[in-house]
Amino acid sequence: MQETMGQIIKRLRKERNFTQEELAEQLGVTCQAVSKWENDSGLPDISQVVPLAVVFGVSTDVLFGRYNANDDATVDDIIREAKAPLKTDNSNYSEVDCYNALTNALKTYPNNTKLLLEALTFGAGILMDDDVETEEQKDRLYTDCLHYAELVINYSKDVSSVLRAHKWLIYLYCHFGQFENAKKHASMFPKANETQGMMQAWISRAMKNNDDEIKFRCNTFASLLSAIEFELRPLGDAYKRQKKYEEAIKVYETILNIVDAVYGSCEYTPPMHCLAWVHFGLAHSSLLLGNDEAAIDWLEKEYEFNVRNARHFNKQTHLPIPALAACEFKFFSGRYHIEDLKEEFNYSCFERLKGNPRFDALLEKVEKL
Image (cartoon, rainbow, N blue to C red; front, side):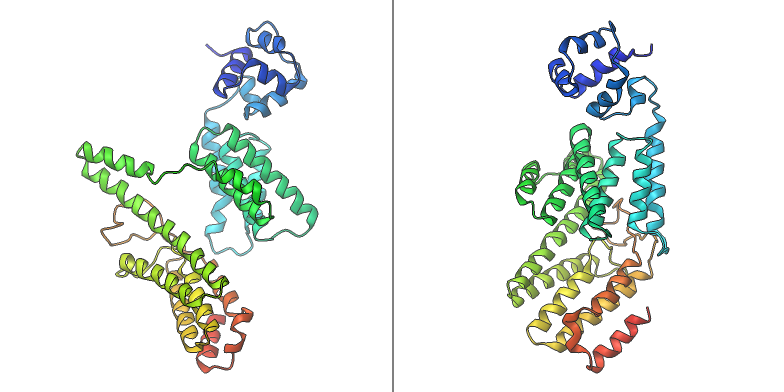
């Protein structure tokens, strides 16, 4: 039997742990009015339908009992189609275009938390890249991102989605210098080393399901590798900003040693390890120590890394090593690595290398890519 609107309102209220008094307060109505709705003794005024949908984080169709379970699959298709051109060699399609496609879909599915999270991800990225033409556009995008994050945090039932929303808010608040707000959201993250994959692996081990245990542990290992690189590279950058260039070089080289120990036998290194930036850090630190030849050595390695990975552009790569053989991640390489490379070689910090035959020859090869 189909639910009445009153039953739907009652179910949504309880799912979100609202009391009737709390819901009434948010809508600006009396507690008696909410009670009448839920008992099917009366219906909300038409002016209350949209505010109800917003409070519950659902579309108005849900309140009217017209929610279609296929909507979730449709949203998945929308997200996939919006992001697909970014994985192809099409320089005319940008992250701004992807964001616009996602926000256009939000007009149809205004409270879908998966769609909201994707819009937040791309919107925050655009803001942090300063890829906005006017201050008015920046303010509007910033406000929209805060709104998207609030909806995801309040209404998503997926913990990882909620934490991703908190993460993007931290990045945005830090980018705009609102550090106290960033700290509040940082406090929402759990203090734990265990992951779901680790726990699933232990369950598989107890069940003597070796295949599943290997799969879970491979995925966890790949995630931990990415996390190590994600933390160590900024550590090297921090030492470099402190003018502790030798310490920075040691940190950067540690990353290369770890990655080489895992991927040394592979032709291709997954882009989850952005070694291009590590090579750049080593080159810049060597340059700041006055060692121009060492700087060029690292720039040559950076060139080789990008050219090698470009051969695997937009192709799934299977890694022939035991540590990650069962990994479910799909590794893709993108042309943006080449564009980054061209930009890096023209950084002002490398200006003094111009005139060095090795650097000039390398620069010429980069410009031809």
